[in-house]
Image (cartoon, one colour):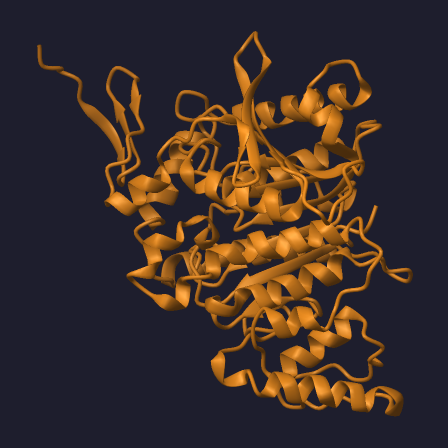
Amino acid sequence: MASNKKIVEHVSNWLRVYDDGTVDRTCTGPSPVQLLANSVPPHDKFIEGVAVRDVVIDPSNGLTVRIYVPERDNIVSGKEKLPLLLHFHGGGFCITQPDWYMYYQFYTRLVHSAQAVCVSVYLRLAPEHRLPAACEDAYAAFLWLCSVARGELSELWLNNLADFQRVFLIGDSTGGNLVHYLAARAGDMNTEPVRLAGGIAIHPGFLRAELSKSFHELPETPLLTRDMVNKFMSLALPDGATKDFPITCPMGPLAPPLDDLKLPPMLVAVAEMDLIRDSVLEYCEAMKEAGKEVEILSLLSTSSLLFLHNSNFYRKRSRVKLKSHKALSLSLSLSLRASSASSEPSVATLLDYGAGNVRSVRNAIRHLGFDIKDATHISSTDEREEISKADSNKFDIIINQLDSLHQQGGFLTMASYCPSHYTRTWCVANPMFSSSALIANLNYAFKNQKKKKTFLPMA
C-alpha cells in the first residue's frame, strides 16, 4: 500500500521531514557524497593500525560513543598513556553520526598517526530532539569520561590507554559549538582527575540572527548552502529561539559573558570560503578581547569541512584540493605527539611538508623558536626582519632552501580579513600545501613555552 505521507520540510539532499513527524535522513546526493554518509561498522581487530568499538554509556536512553584506539608504533612507548580526543560531530544538529565514512576515514588516520585515543559521541538529532539535547549528550559523555577516569566505571580501552590529564575537546561544524559549550561548563566543575588541555573548533557553526557579509556574498557549495544553514537552524533551535541562541552565538548578548568563563586554550579553524566565516572570526575577536587564549587557522580558497572529504572525491575534480583533507589530520597528529615529547620541532618540518614564501617562513621560524630574535612585526609594506648576527647564517640557509621550493605553491601568515593582532594566525594560500602551515602552527602550539602560554600546552 502506497504511503500517504507528505514532506513538510526538505533540506537539500540530506533530510526530509514528513507530516506524521517522521524523518528520513537517506542521503540522495551524488554517489561520491553518498559515500561520505555510508555507515562503517566497528571492528575490535586492528585494521590499518586502528581498532574501533561502539559502547553504550547510558542504557536508560541509549547514549552511545564510538572509541578509536591505535595499534602501538615504535615511536610511543607501550607503557605511555595516550592523549584523548572527545569528539562531537557536526551536521547542523540535524544530520551525521560518528560511524559515517567521512568521520571514520579521518579519525582512524588521525588516531593512528597521532597515537591518540578518540571518543566520538552519537548525538541526538533535531528535529526529533531540538537543542539543548545535543548539549546534554555532550555533557553526559564528559561526565561518563570523568567517572571512568575516577575508577567509578570501567572501560578497558580507556583505562589501559588514555591519559586523562591530556583530554582535548574537538568538534567540526556545529560540533565546534559543543566544544565551546562543554569547555565553558567544565570550567565550573571539579573534573579531577580529568584535565582539559584544550579545545579545537573546526569550522564551527557560530551564527547571529543578523547574518554576516560572508553569508550573503560568498558562493554556495553543494555541501553547504544558505538554505541548508537556515533550515537546519529552524529545525534545531528551541521553539521561538533565533540564531542569537547561546549555543549558536556564544559571543552574543544572550550567552554568558566570555569574560566570566574559565576556558582552556582554544584553536579555531576557519575556512575562507565558509559562508559563516565572518561570524566565526567575530567569535575569535570576542574571545581575544575577553582575554582568552585563542588561535585561528585559516585555510584560504577552502570551503567548510574540506578536511573530512575523501580524497577520491577530489582526485578527478581538482588536484589542488587533493591533499587538503589530510592536512588537519597530519598536523594534529604531529602536535599530539609533541604534547608528550621533549624534542624541539625541527626545521625539517617546514622543508618536508611543503613550500612557503619568504615572509611566511620567516614568521614560522620565528614562532617555532629557532633562536631567531624577534625584532619588528612583518607587515604588508615591510617584509624585512632584523635578526641577530649569530643567527643570520643559519636563517639564510633555511630561507635559501625554501626559496627553491617557492614556485610549487605557498602559504601566507595573514589574510585581509584576519585581525592584525593575531600574530600566530596561519592562512593557507594553497590547500595543496595546507599541511605546511597547519603543522608549523600546531608544532609551535604544543611546544613547552616557559614565558607564555599557548594553545594546547604540554602536559
